[in-house]
Amino acid sequence: MTQVNTTQDSTRQNVLGEIISLIAANPASSENINAILKLVQAASAATSASFILFDEPKLVISSGDSDSWINHEQILQSFTAKLSDKLNINPPLIDGLASKHQNWLAAPLRNGKLDLGLLWLSFDTLPPLADTLDALVDSLSILASNLHAHESHEHSHQLTISLLTSITDPLLVLDDDRNLLLMNPAAETVFKAKADQVRGKSLREIVQSEELIALGSDETKKLAEWISPDEKTFVPRIEAVRDAQGSLEGWVLALRDVTQFKKLNRNQSEFMRIVSHDLRSPLTAMQGFASMLELGLVGEMNEKQNHFVSKILAGIAQMTALVENIQDAGRYDPESGFYELTRSHCDLGEMLRKIVDNQLVPAEKALTISVSIADNVPIINADTNMLERAIINLVDNAIKYTPSGGKVEVGAKCENNEVIVTVKDSGLGIDAQDQQHLFERHVRIARQEHKKIKGSGLGLFIVRSVAQRHGGDAWVESTQGKGSTFYLGIPLDGPNLVTAKE
Ligand code: ADP
Image (cartoon, rainbow, N blue to C red; front, side, top):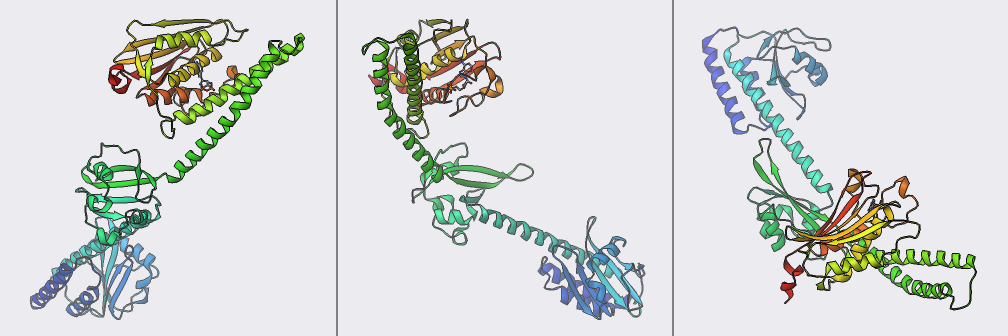
């Protein structure tokens, strides 16, 4: 740095002081730049002074007789990249730049390695230079960085607002004390509040629902559903927002609107209920008449006729089973089923023996079916019909999916305060991937060996629904090629205990 003339230095010091106080008063505002440039120009006798920012925000502010190329951002960026830090005196100009003045000073406005902009001063006669100009460049670089940070912040804030607005489900962003920072228009509608008016207020004041307040105050709490005052159904979820270091910054409460799904589900269940109910009576009548034919009550039949009647009866049995499963799947569904459990004393041993005795094994299939009930299985207080329907499905599957010559073992045991019904077969087994979704509605495994076996994919859904409605669960253990064991567990506590009722 060229160091000359100390009397002028003190004036420059004063000017610099003035500039720095202007920047300090408003560290992220571009409003003062004009005034600053005028001061710079006056103090350094420059013919022109320009402050240029390349991006976020784009800015070109000039004072005095500036050159026209100061608007050519790309050229200036290439030029700035070549400059050394702080003040450059008469640095070589690149193509596209030409100065109408004799001398020029250029200083990159940098934040680390990032070129944010350029300070350009032009002179007819280069004045003696002082360190104060270096300090000025530092201050302007800080101002440029602040403007850049402010713009980036504004930009991401705007982005967040647009994102929130575009989400059609209600969303509330809370600080770590659970006071409102932001809420989207969908949330404004549900909670009948304007974000601007309730910003900073507590979740309690905004949502006015004890359930949501409880969820908001303890993220480990789960709330399956929340019904809004205008009768819409939402699935609420609260998530912590953390900074890069993992410290808690706030919370997001999101409410997924499932009103439409609930309605569709109800309509579907209702449709299924009506259809299956109306199919039952004609099926019963058909079964009755076909049985009369089979028994020869309306005259002798030849062998071919008998064969056809047995096919008709098999078809009717299949349709009846399907109708029953459709009905059960609708009624027992833990999410949408309207079925109320009717509990009574339930002897699982007796039930299993009865089911196995009555279960029809196709004549052409040779299967060994056994029942074994552990001594410690108690009488439970359960919905006998429901349990029977679930276990029939398990035994029916074991018979359906086990090839001739195989073994089916039905049992019940008591383990870890739970009664467990087991249905084990020596069939083809199920691979681990298929096991994952087996208990979902309408899931059937597509495999060549089972191609001819009819089914609706509702049996195991019913099994799990029945278990869940008793507070338990259903699961499977299976190895490909080695058979499967299906489990239905009912916990021995609460209303399942016989003592609980008496
Ligand atoms: P469905 O038998 O009517 O298809 P389920 O819900 O009862 O419906 O069973 C779903 C699928 O699980 C079946 O399609 C079958 O592929 C498989 N599965 C069920 N039980 C067994 C079993 N014991 N052995 C092998 N696969 C089975």
